[in-house]
Length: 96
Image (cartoon, rainbow, N blue to C red; front, side, top):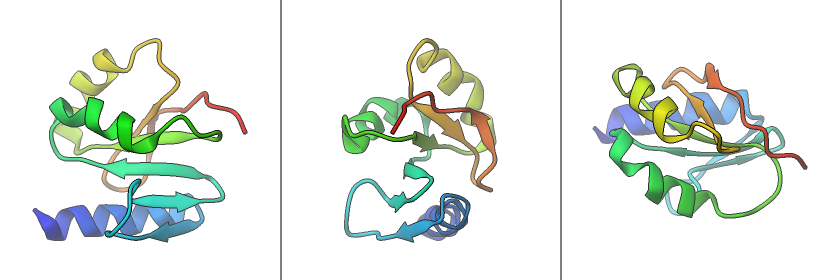
């Protein structure tokens, strides 16, 4: 689990032109936005809390089997969804 989490966070960090720091929340902070990597969609409320109310795009990163649940939970919200490869599934509508 930790290996897939770290691998996903590093890929997302490259996409967002940022850095992955496992010691801080959110996991990834960059010029292209912020991202928190989680495994189950049930952790979305915790991820949103960790992303905070800052400005700029914010994403929850989840594995493919969790995307449907994530899209249902985040419908109408500004937080986006990315997969473990850094591809955007739902764009973030948070503005800078």
